[in-house]
Image (cartoon, rainbow, N blue to C red; front, side, top):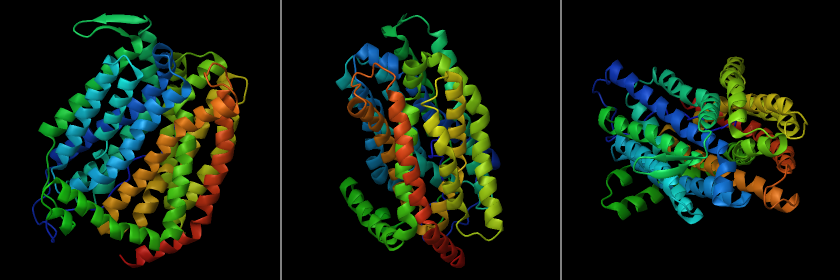
Length: 473
């Protein structure tokens, strides 16, 4: 999974007053403790998604679901809620304690993982996954805001990069740990105290709930809430009551959307290309374990262990290489350096992404899929940096929310795109054959070049916007 959602850094947090605070910065011990906790949070949140993908086939079998029902319940539903709730919850990080937003959200996610282990019907599972999507809505922006008030500007990039190590290792380590975990849970059913008899995948959900709950409590009771610095949007800060606050949030988005429309030549291709890329990449990762089971007769434990070892090495290398290439291009005075790396990475990964689903050997498929993920990952860091570099400081938090909205919408649309192709175009509504391979290959063959073309069309406008932004600083 390429997961373009490596958390982008926000350079300055919104604050409670119109002037930059002169209060001392938090101690290094408190600051780096927060980075450690948030890095673990990034790992668990992304790790939950990868581990869930390994369990799709046994969940589908036990709950008697179709591919399309699986993609709705565990893919689209929660992501749609997350996308829209993020736009509403993110600005609340400007006025409420950020550790409350982060901590309560993590506890909600943990409780929903616990609930996913307890429910017996598809309808109840859908409700639980919807609530889980709401739990993660404010995590990213609240985390960025808190860290931006914890570290001086010169030290903030290092702190953000350190925190995102959690994502880099989650890509491979979760597959690996998940594979060994599923292998160890070889018995179909387990009888546990209090909760009773559970299937093996339900036990995994119980295990997933533990780190989310613990991290939520750590954030609530041990992470320092620093004094705010900089400026906050007056209408939100001065609003009274819940509905007044919501109305103020909507009003404050008006100039943001006006700015995005005015600069649509630069932002439009970035947003649309991101959406299309995420549909393909997340749809691919969501159905990866079922693909290996149906096409190559590898169980989720076997696939997870093999895929984990490869990505644990290749994925971080791709992410670091992308940053190095973009930095080298920028030093040569290339204004569109960040987006140019995105175009190159998107174009280079397409042959691997299409071929892995069609080759007859599972080992060849594994290598090609890992190379595809690592190559597209080269563009992840530059893509996150690209929109930050042309976003005005006073709008950066809300522009970040709109960017993550597009990413999350892509995550929501990816799984049902694959299941719909399999059911209707390749005539396998029950998901009982290996025809899912053709869905994966076709999706990448169509959406991959389309995303690259859109990114490429926006290079000139992005370079001009980047030059203007640099001149204004």
